[in-house]
Image 1: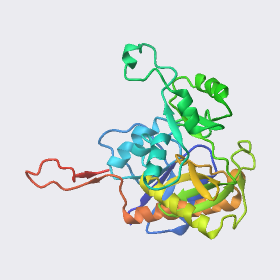
Image 2: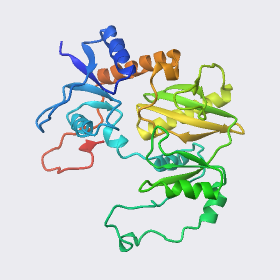
Image 3: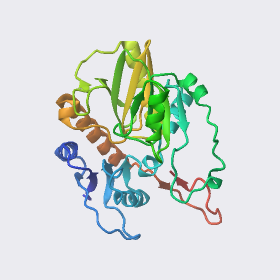
Image 4: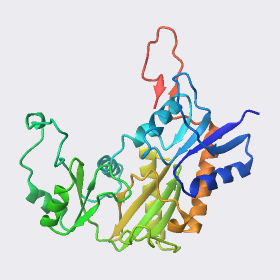
Length: 319
């Protein structure tokens, strides 16, 4: 029987080996999981992996072309490397709003600085008379300012007034920043989402120090109605974005869950942070999805067959 390999790209963390051990212990149809080993890659080389779980390419750029090449040669990658590199938070909020998920009021702002050599003439398409008072009236204070493509709380600041905003905005450099309504929440939830419909809603304290007691092990912290709404919104968001691994945060105000952060393709996964119980859930669900996708022979790109004379039509490749 030909082996069907599942590869893992990661940093030094507990999740990869735990998932690899879980998959290998199942002894399913010749499926074997291992850590990826990547070197030089020729165009003619086809990736040996049926599926790769990627938790490192957002930092280690050398993995990115390898993963895209792997997709072309038929490998399924969690998460889709073409999409992860293109995604951004402002698009996320726009999409969520379009599919009926509540999100905070948000404004995308021009960068404060631009690369050397860019002149005022080059920036002729950017308005130079931003109506700050209108923006502040629309968003209100306190507010959150953060990069449109950020992760891991990078450069996220809660500002209480216009002076604090301008100080934070002035420090943002070339970053494209979002100014967002701060939801004064009575309850906060961080959901781990694996595949299209595996959702674990966790009580979460976003104000706790990073590495502190942010994840709170407490069951039955949602009413049935609110729990169903959050689960439905998570499924909607993940399906719309095409993520197979994500975390989605909701700030709940007056009983309404607002999706405040859901571009997290490499969510927290250390047991000392998320708890051993939630860690075991993540191991099992990620292994379930990986094995299921391999058995389905699931692809990100499908090359259709072209009949003679058809030319290259839009149905030939589906991404």
